[in-house]
Length: 222
Image (cartoon, rainbow, N blue to C red; front, top):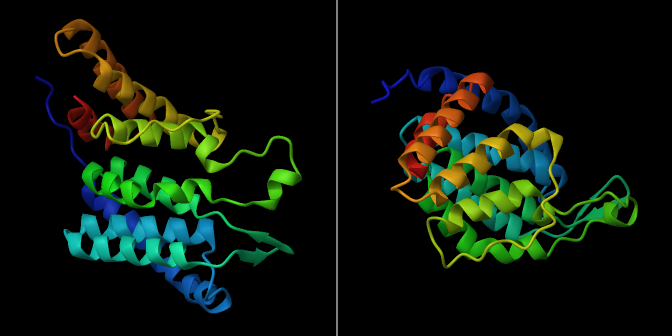
């Protein structure tokens, strides 16, 4: 039996609180300047940080409240006008928030959100698509496809995401871990040696990347 390592929850909470405190200085200006739109990347990061902070503080109701408020603001949002272009990308919050919740061990909540808001992945309109032949929508990324597949493994009513599965350098380490988690969940229970090898590889990746949370994910996907 593998001995539990320290979770580092205190250090994680401190880091999250530091991020939130800094982001608090700027988020009001975003709400003020874009009252009817959702400024996707900064608001998504802020939402995830606030949700993580609430869970780390043991306040599940606050985590749910923050997620719900952001999702509804995202749902009601008008296209974002910035840099001389209109952007409508509600898919970013849905995909990234569900993925973050999986990493927090809140898979049931991720499934609940995705089951309610999954169609937002297909409403995206982004002018960048017409400017770059390499443009990829969130739903076409390997990251999003893996997020959906991980939820599918716990709820088969969720259809797998038809995707180009384009990898991205920013998420390559997450994608590698997620692919092995998916493999672990899909490997039959009686294949002890194969499952053990996958787990050992995941432990190694977690240690190499200093992702302490990987251990709890291994348990969940076992």
